[in-house]
Amino acid sequence: MTQKTGVVAMMTFVSFSIMGRYFIRPAAVLAFAPSPKSLLSRISKRPLQQQHIAWMTTDIAATTDSTTPSSSSSSSLMVMKRVKTANAMPSDDPVLIKGWVRTVRKQKTLAFVEVNDGSSMKGIQCVLLFDDIDEATKEAIGSLTTGCSVEVQGKVVESQGQQDVELSGTNLRLIGDCPGDTYPLAKKRHSLEFLRSLAHLRPRTNTIAAVARVRSTLAFAIHDFFQTQGFLYLQTPLITASDCEGAGEMFFVTTMDMDEISKLPKETIPVAAKTNDNDDNDDKKTKKEHVVTDKVDYSQDFFGKKAYLTVSGQLGAETHACALGDVYTFGPTFRAENSQTTRHLAEFHMVEPEMAFADLTSAMDNAESMLKTVVKKVLDERLVELQFFQKFYDKKLQGRLTKLVDTPFVRISYRDAIGYLQEEIGKDPTKWQFPNVEFGTDLATEHERWLAETKFESAVFVYNYPKKIKAFYMRDNDDDGGETVNAMDLLVPGVGELVGGSQREERLDVLLKKMEEQDLDPKDYWWYLDLRRFGTVPHAGYGLGFERLVCYVCGIENIRDAIAFPRYPGNAEF
Image 1 (tube, one colour):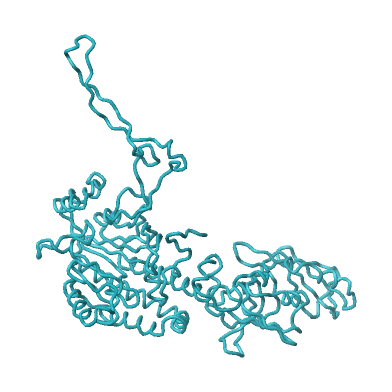
Image 2: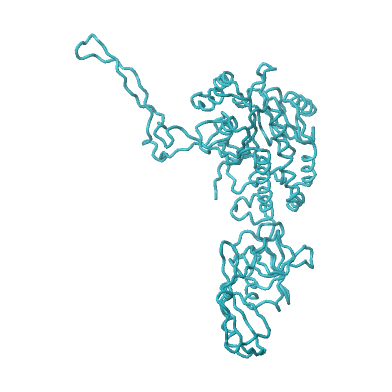
């Protein structure tokens, strides 16, 4: 027979984490009269990290046989869900918010703690009423500083302030403290130049965090575009023996000990030497001798030859395009160009599609469609970040991006572009850093930006460039005697050149002649030439500088702020 008696029941929970999810397991269910304070005291003094306590005041059915809960029920798991601040929605279920403290405001009866976990611009405001929290939480609140990491429990509710939602907190735990006297990111606005010296901490700032989120969205959108279009994703090697651009600005890769130059192996060359035959002094024989030179013998290096970090994955991508149809690469590339401009990095990422049975028009069509698609993705999904960039960096940003998506790109020949520039420069040459422009001029950034920002106020394809300023693999145009190549650059406002591409030279005899003109050894490109020997096909492609795209979409000027850890002359920190 069961008799009801009024008691207080207390359930203790042991918390633990599995694969990043937070679990609570009932440790014990205790029934007692309200008077024994010693038991409450012992439990409340347990470390907060080891247990969470849930109170229930109820009538417990006391059984005469003192039956205990079954082992299956006592070992069941109750999950407290962790929620990212970007996805926080009002709910009756308690949740966990984990992140870093931005601000703390304490009043007489409550505290406001702004927590940001990186998933959104503003994070979430946690409101903790002192009457509703335990002493351990009050003590933790007293220790909070900007930058420390915390875990907050509570319910997401509609906000009474400017935010859409806030967390009605019931428990807060300090995970990692952050001494305010030594933390270099005080709550103030820092220059981007200063933040580059703290690249390991700058993702905690609004600007760099927003750049990272936009960058992630762009990268996903690029992959999604090409996958939807039926392209195959290809990973080309980072170490190569070929100079794709023929410019020679490549990083050298070796395992040889350059600190011991005198011990490096040297090349030897055979020479003919005349010697007297022992049996007949008049009969001279010729034998070969080897003379040691001053050149390093790289046949004894790791790869058996000179090797470099790649400047492009294009040549490798062509091999697969000539078998699989349409492919693309998206990976790091390197260029040892001694440039300190805001547009250049020594390590950067390139998006490089290659299309078989395609010409230059196909490449321009694909590049335009891709850019419109990925920029629209950012406009749709990263509006808060774009509003931030427009407020602090580029007042016309959203309008410019919307126009790019909605307006067809302009397409003009290189000859026409030179004509427009000569006409404009002629009005006042003193306004230009490079006023001398003629056929054969490699357009400078000021020329590119004038065409995109002033002349057309639009993205502009410039095509049919002079042969002498472009790479060896670009197809010669037949209609002008080979003076130009079937190449294009895409110029956009605020950046200048964003995309460069061409139809590739598929004719073996023409390609060999071009390589000879540029002093390239066909033996180094034997595999590339085989594509022309066996089933050659017209094909085209282009390269998109990913960091430049990030700059364009975010409205930031310096490319060093568009990548996590910028590499440039004199800097390889972190």
